[in-house]
Image 1 (cartoon, helix red, strand yellow):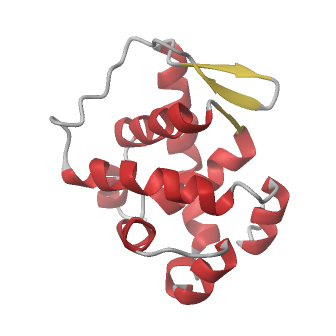
Image 2 (tube, helix red, strand yellow):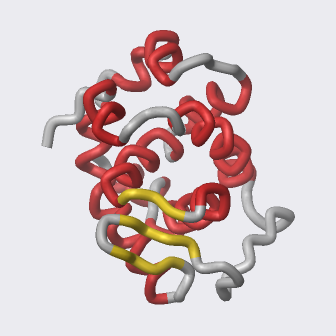
Length: 151
């Protein structure tokens, strides 16, 4: 990936997305977190999630196969960003790690003022609840199979 990919999808943006995601679901498996960011950091995925309704996660993938054709590459490329963003949140006492989960800290120090952040983050924030609803009935291992992730 080019340097612009890492400027556009940096640790600060990823940390905001992780924090907002955890505000909705309170806790997430580490392995599931690695799936979430490649989808929620994709403008086209966010637009589709925000503007459309899907019955199942597979329906989303079938309607937009081009968004998922190189998902494994995005998954691997964003691994360091995911790790670094969680580390930043942990150092700021916004999350805590427990066995295989990342957990939200209630009343953390960082307050996200949605009036002062950019449109990209607001759109991602709008897509998060829909993404959670779309994937909540799936085990993480099933999502890995559906997305054809190779480690």
